[in-house]
Image (tube, rainbow over all chains, first blue to last red; front, top):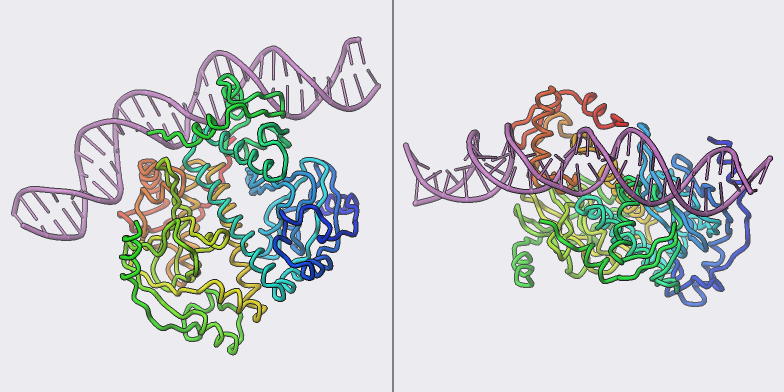
Length: 247
Length: 247
DNA sequence: TGGTGAGGTTGACGTGGATCAAACGCAGGG
DNA sequence: CCCTGCGTTTGATCCACGTCAACCTCACCA
């Protein structure tokens, strides 16, 4: 395994970067910072790494040093337990942070894998803590980001605990749609970066069930599906389906 | 609803408190602080509130101001969505923090309810941020606590996404056992503070399924169950059952 | 002491999604 | 151009858990 890690390291291309001229600064960590503060953040985010599709950004068990902001591309995180079971715990896109799980024990507890060629900014965590002791806004924003992750996880728990298959998939698609929209992409038409199996793992379903749900949505005119290309034809219908109570 | 909130407020008994002589200081926020720092924390944790069984500590939708440390007692948190579905997202015991979900939007996103008569310390969040800009150790520890919550949620997602009923219950009981142990109580014998229904909600199961699993564990000699009184007879057996892979 | 009601147990039955299996479609390589 | 293989679709069958319903237990109270 350690040799794999080494290989992954070599695949990284280290690039000097700066938050102050990054077009993600309204989406990412620097939200709401003053120009002078932004300048300080530039020193913090010292390296950028390129990853190819399939590369690990980090692995469970590896020591934790930095959190990462997705600059471009698409990631998944997954956990696996000794008996062979695994679960995708999230998908991360542009401007979202990776690695927050590692803070608690100084060791990453999940794997982060690029689902397409991607770039991330590495943010050494001790530096981030130092800087957020100086910049109140940054501190507060970082706390909000961590809290939002907790709220998101509660949403997933709700989905896994109470929703049926089609409701889960509808919720998943609407969430993706909204996140693409927030990034200036079409909320109605997008390419899935992940396989049916990965969607299933995230939603607590088998890939066949995911596939059947897609087919059903298409039959009902809610979606147009061509492989991983998705077009949402009836957002309201999806939303209604998602919140349709059973009993 | 707002009148309910008012009622809940009135039910609180405000008590002057201090971290520096609290016997939970090794379990709670003050871990690892120097005496001088602890003194500062005392000013922060200004009020203690008593709640009776069934009282809400806060409700979803209420404005967020403070996080809370459980000083004694037992809580559950749950989220509910418009269509009537709800899910218990966690159970909190002595020394654990409540309210972290509220940071992201300044509004609580779940309900926190006392499952037995309890006491909490209220920690005004803006003060906590201020103090953690001064006390590095506190800052870091708080970050770890938030991160640990994220890791815990990932564990629950794993449980909900990949485990079957008996595996879930085994995992739940072992987790409780370990937390009681960490607090100096017997890891083998304890009283459940929550109903079968609440356990089911947390584990994504119906109460009948929970009840059947308890009966089965008892038949197999893993547990002795008398209502909410649990005695674990075979920890290894439970652990094996939990990690028993299926296919 | 017996009545009442909430929480828990147990049984019979139904069903949503898992499992198993076959076939399809597209991309990459010789 | 066809071969190969992976990801996906679709169908048939199975089973774990949900649902519905009866009954049991204990705490509480008149």
